[in-house]
Image (tube, rainbow, N blue to C red; front, side, top):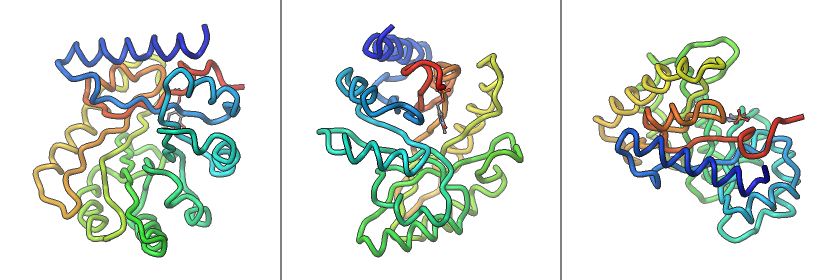
Length: 230
Ligand SMILES: *Cc1c(COP(=O)(O)O)cnc(C)c1O
C-alpha cells in the first residue's frame, strides 16, 4: 500500500465512523503524526492531500520545516511533550500546541507569545487515567486550570487532548474518550474570554474510529498512514 491509498482508506473510515454516530465527517481533522518519518515521505503525504503535520520533537520538526515548511496550505501542530527550554522555539512556529500540561507551562507560552505579538492556540492535555507515565491535568484540576489559563491574553484554549492507556483492543479506550468529551461539555457551559474549548484531540492509528464515535475533532495518526516506525 502506498501513502495515497492509506490516506484514502483512513478518510473512508473517518467518514464511516462519523456517520455511525450522526456526525459530519468534515468536523474531524486528520493530523499526520510524523515522528521519524522522512521529509521525502512527507512530501508524498502532502501530494496525497495531507495538510496537517503533527510533530513530537522540535529538532526533527525544524529540519523538516526547513525543507517543506512553506508548502501552500500546510500547517504544523506540536503534539509531543514540551520541555521548558524549548518553548521559545515552539511558540509561534506551530499553529496548535496539543499537549499543554500545566498552568505554569501555559504562562511561559503566554509570555513568549506576547513578545512575538501573537496569540498561540493550545489544547490542554488531560491525563484521564491519571497514569504516572503521562503528563496532563488530572480531571479534578481541569476546571481551575481552564479558568487560570483563560485569563492569559496571548494563549487561546481551543480544546482538550488525551492519550489513554494503551491497549490492543480499541474498545478499552472508549471510556476515556467518552470521559474527555464529558469534561469538554461540562466546561463548555461556562463562559470563557477566549470562547468555548470545542476541540477534542484524541485517537491514534488503532483507536481513531472509536475516538470519532466519542466525539474526536482531531485524530493523530502515524502508523496507519506511514507504516510501522523503525
Ligand atoms: C506517535 C503519536 C501518535 C500516532 O501514533 P500511531 O499509533 O502511530 O498512530 C499520536 N499522538 C501522539 C502524541 C504521538 O506521539
